[in-house]
Image (cartoon, rainbow, N blue to C red; front, side):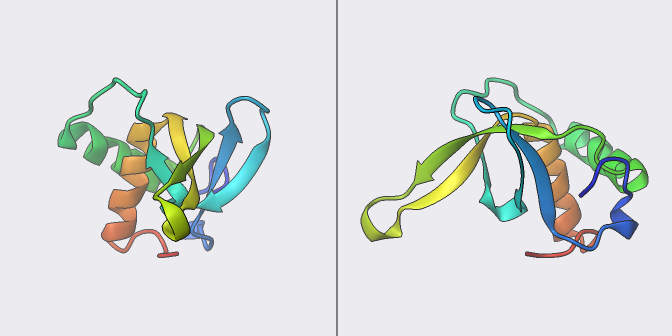
Length: 105
């Protein structure tokens, strides 16, 4: 979703993210984002729902910051992106996707 683009105007189920170490801007599917094991903040369901309503009305105003992370073992190993900053935004976007307000991958 582009900055300041409302969910209704969003036609791509992609998320703009910034790589933490390289500061590179990437666009990846929401399904490729996973919580970082280093993120200590906890958010209530109400906080996530409130942010989802704001994102639906105003669009995503801030990019997520991620680091690369391999998930799984052996042949099932996949490259994912661990969210270092923006876990509540990730959860809000997933909630919007579950409710059919954001396109599925």
